[in-house]
Length: 125
Image (cartoon, helix red, strand yellow):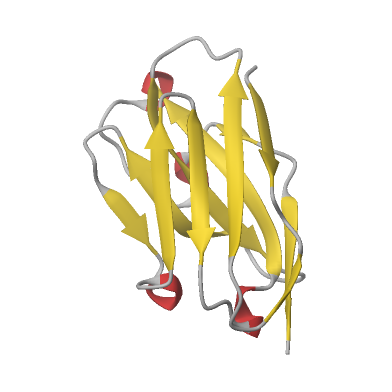
């Protein structure tokens, strides 16, 4: 079982910026993709931004042009700019390794293998 640790969540005023960071250790197979998912009370965990080893980035429509995901070795970051109240939620870092099948989707929660405990982002106006 890999250990996924994310950080960087905070309360920020609308229009502000925040950067989340995440690292993974203890995994057995090569990392295929890493990324970020968001969950709010009563809703399913949704994909926000992911990045795979083919260099393909996925962004939810609601964050395109404002968020940037990066992947380097066993770390990923999420730069969030022009934050809106709708961005509020618990952000989870997730990892999929070759064990899940190389080249698969990384856009849905069910595609991912390992999860962090989450970091809370609150955007207030």
